[in-house]
Length: 366
Image 1 (cartoon, helix red, strand yellow):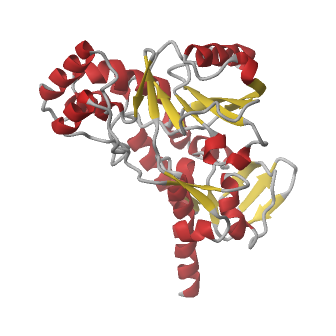
Image 2: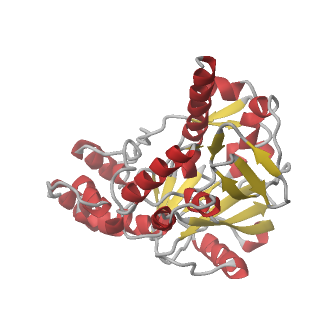
């Protein structure tokens, strides 16, 4: 991926240092390794429960958290953040997605981080790359320039017997191979004569939706950190990141920017939206001493229907049924919402590349 992206753009390489906000206190990320700013009482509770954590085989994500971090940290940090980010309770999630996405500390790491500020970056990714100009999408310029793309076409019907796709504008395209990154619950709705049990399986696949409040500031020094995790329940956004720290070219000269991410699902509905959410973000941003309202030059709020796949306990069975049906129907699915998996951007691109390589190889061997 590094080689592919470098063909399209020069990039900044960031040391992924993030911070956490917890009840008025800023802790370096991951919080479990950087407890020094907390009160002595809280540090004692966290360390004591970490030492006495249960040794069970986890049946859900809540139990997995308990055996990794102990009860106090799980209750006041991880479980709260889970509800904010995944828009469901930790008990409702399985552990299929966890893999290497967590820093799992040794007792010695927790003790060191509780006594003094740490310089070591315990984050699971050691570097992050971002284009110098043009935003993330320019990573794809070299590939996009080599193919024909029809944009702004909404597929409304797929006939797998006659092998064609109909679009909202009335046009129709026949295909020999069909590769789809459409979210699976939407895909099964537009397949002609799709069985009812597959439609029901599509309804069992759950994802979060996102509310993005983006703020442009009239001064260059508002963001202190590349991104932030927020553990307080009364602050609705789960995360904040700074596009202007990713690249100074993402803003005009002398400006800076932040984007606040709030999530919801069928389990946890929106608390606010539109102007109400914007007002909330401004008030909480001031409360966190991140900025003042007078610093704001421009602000935008948008809703994104599909944000993250929810790894609940129905996912595996429903996904297996849908993928088996689609394979028989000759539709190959790629990407985060085609594979219905927790894929990062590079993994999503690889998902498509592997499929195309397989199809090309089969055609060459025919």
